[in-house]
Length: 468
Image (cartoon, rainbow, N blue to C red; front, side, top):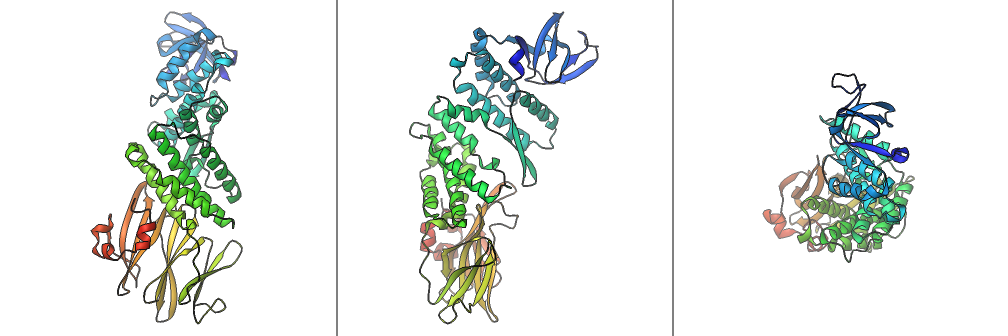
């Protein structure tokens, strides 16, 4: 660590502090320093300190008012911890707080170090990564880049990958792992578990086998958190994260041919225990995301039905990684199906629903862990066809489309679609034309649509999460 060899140091407290060749404002500028840069003090002249920057490997002079001198002896550890407690929740002061955390960990005796400084260090590193990801291309981008360099000088490691056309920066979580390894309060352990299991920091390019192992570890870590004594707000966050992780595991286990029912039921149970009256303002979006994730995989909780002799769905292996959907009836079985269509998605046979006339069938198919589509089989003059109704007309990200009821007359059907579009959650209850699958009417609530209110399926109403 940078501070290892320093006895008397100064931490820069102002951005764009000039490191000059001489103790004068007119002297040549050697470098620009930022909040959190730690300098070795080598002398003083007038109102300047003579310092050496080990990160930049440069010496020079800096105004004393732009930094705070301290020492790394045990007697000063309590003062460093007090400053750390003050700045840890200050927006924009993450690199400064990381510097004080590093100074405290160097100064404090090993037996006196608890989980608190690591909790603070992880919190600030995570917040810095989130700010850098959100502010790409903005005017303070160079400042954030400097903060990241300062953080890196203390051993704070960031990982990055592309998500939705942008670079996602994530803290690697070393400080949070240390929290879990030390005696810590229930809230500190919950905070660490939530930070280490963030959905946004799961690399979307992970191979399926590695993603499965990671999600199993995430589920085990979250289950190790004792929620009994947690504040309601934190307890809600743990349950929300568990719901999303278990929903993903339900999908992954179904893809591997493993039993997925228990995972899906667990996801539904975790969502059901959320105390919505205690959700913080920033948690409503998290609640919506968890509900959509669980909705995408909820059919895993339902047993596959017995084949319908009138009209039904049979699945069969296709090309490697594919499942073929065979539409059959009493006259034409699997050897000569009415229609055959293959997919790399998971086919939820329990979702198959036939209209009263036997001329249409709705089926849920899930190609991704957070994306579930609705397949509509229709009988026409030239035979059967199948079309896909996606959650939204965007690239697959997170959302679901589900059947909600047949309207008498076989001219319309009822659907619900919910998805995240351009950063906003959109939920629509729709009356869809059967001949074109175009939406005739839509609303934010089923009660606003007369056909939806009258003909919604009782089974759908009992099972759906869209009415939460």
